[in-house]
Length: 416
Image (cartoon, rainbow, N blue to C red):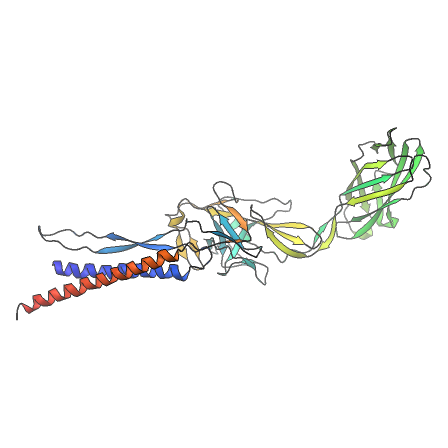
């Protein structure tokens, strides 16, 4: 009966507009949620077969939820170095577990980059999800398989230990008196060993003839080193204009010393490149102008930084920087087809297509914006307008039910 179909059409209108109201309510409630993507309920008519010619049976309406996951929100600056936003396509890979992550633990995807360091040292966002990344290898590189989520781990920036950088290069600016070369003061250089300990490397110079000197490297105290190669005395030659020519038969910036530490110290042999390019032999008193050396003793983590390539680094109070991990960007052919999960995250689906892990800024993946957050894509003016339209449509659908009820009442009254 057409009246019954009208009644059911009115009910479908109530159901569809209730869904639309729920979506609008979610959008308004999440207007300040980081990287929230608005949802919208679209309407599609339902057509029923017309059994009797000349009579119309209403089919009603159905609500179809549409996600706008791929819509880019506004990137806004924040005051935290661990806040991250993605400028472009892609998602952060996250889990609900930090330590002890296994292959069976669920991975999800989010653009909510409000990460901070939790008490255990993990990077975790406001929804309690842990950021995943490729761990750094011993040589400073990263292994980045494009489809293996288990190759990543929860990023931890706390249990890194102290950073030590042994001295590997020494540069000296000095002059050796050509006319009065008697016993110039030795040049003492502070160096750092592989364990962060500090030692003194002493370079003593002796003139053997015009434009020719020898250099003897030792440690202070001498017992710190079992030996230093090449063996002393090391020949040093100068040009007639007072500039240095060779050191140990090689260019003045290429002499490779190796300090073999005493066995009691338990240290590995330490190679040190000497750069004596700025050592001269002029008719002036011997003097030392400047000494430079790299290396740093043990230091503690004082800050965390993330660059646009997604590399997470720890900054130490000894001016050293250590790479910790590299953040992967997960992309999908159809991001709007992802399934919503709790914590403003998403799960893969068949409609979303095959997930691919990429380095930030490559292969269509977006760049990472450090110290930034992505704003919600909700437009309050549009949502309130939709709220008014939905309320009117809901009222109209209820009016259909009231009118159909009145018509059925008239039909029942015919018998009376």
